[in-house]
Amino acid sequence: MQYVSTTPDRPLAGELAVPGDKSLSHRAVLFAAMAEGTSRLVGVLDSEDVRASIGAVRALGASVDLVTANDRGLELVVTGWGGEGPHAPDEAIDCGNSGTTARLLLGVLAGWETGATLVGDASLSKRPMGRVTDPLASMGASFESLTGTLPITVRGGGLKGVDYVTPVASAQVKSAILLAGLQAAGRTTVREPASSRDHTELLLPAFGVPVGRDRTTRAAWVDGPVVMKASDITVPGDPSSAAFMVVAGLLVSGSRITVTGVGLNPTRIAYLDVLDRMGAGITIEPSEVAGAEPVGSVHVGYTLGLRAAVVRAAEVPALVDEIPVLALLATQAAGETRFEDVGELRVKESDRLAAVVEGLTLLGASARTEGDTLVVQGPSELRGTGLDSHGDHRLAMTWALAGLAADGPVTVAGFEAVDVSYPSFAADLAALSASG
Image 1 (cartoon, rainbow, N blue to C red):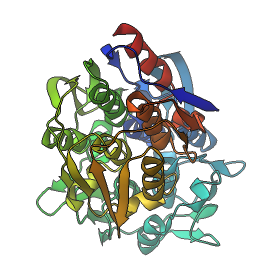
Image 2: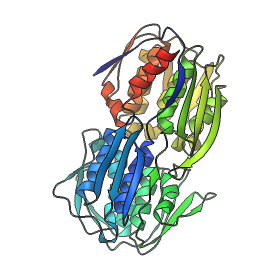
Image 3: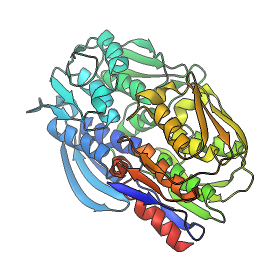
Image 4: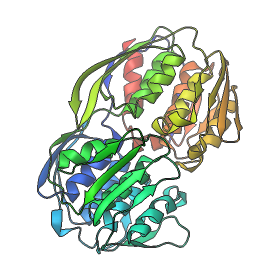
């Protein structure tokens, strides 16, 4: 599917609520399935990735009933397997393109003797799983894989707690180990070299599981074995999805946009700190707590004179999904913007690092890599061109935004990739254009 993006003939304007947070939606579904009792989940993102998690827990014996579905997301009633544990699935569990589904499920299944095989699409089957299976194996789980990628067969049970130091900061790795720790004897501790997203640490207590934390040493721990208890959860809007609408407002002259009901977890809004250093006109308005997360509105207005910024390596784990769209915005900022130590982008849904450089170059911008550092020189006049999403939802949305600032149409091939995280992206963008 192709999408053609052009410069709008008026500023973008209006108020919108982005779909539910993808990371929290995955966790809410998985945790409710693991819990004893029935949970009601509201605002769950209706996307291909999250539906992979829903399908997976159903295959493992959880009951998932759809109450309603609308633009805000899904309302689900989930009855979990609790202390009985998951059922052996009838066939391999298809994780689709969802790395979160696969990696967190490895942690969930590591605690049980159930046995299951996880498979994924061509893209997911290239992504490394050793960083998850290695620590889980040290706890006592066993895995069978020819290449260290999917398909993987996991058989668990009899786990012992570990004190594990991750080589890279990764919320998925940390979460998988902590989830396995729920069935392990003793304390399971994860220590990271930098802070990653902490949704798991915030949400587990809502399901009756105490989580210890030491923010100074970036450690989190659980004591097992423990059975989770059902909980009702409301999922706030996805900060990563909101980032694209915020950048849209900064690309089109005269625009003013408000994104409401968006999650404001400090580990998810590092992109706002970067935009602030670039001089962007942004105001954050906190309002409530939903799904154990702070929530509020983000107001953005088009800003003249954006300046370059340096994104340090320690910041990258908290904004890895936003780097492509920040790199696009950097083409409109004066000076050299540097994103340090972003090698993790090479093992996302695509080689995002190579794809960002390729795409920005085709757009007429100056972009290069220096080892694992991405360098963008601005300001640049962007030109219309044809770009490929490479099946990556973040790239599909980034290239669609490029057309807002280019001198001609930007055609995005493989635009259907947006269905992974933001199915209504094109419609929401069009609504902002129509309201201007």
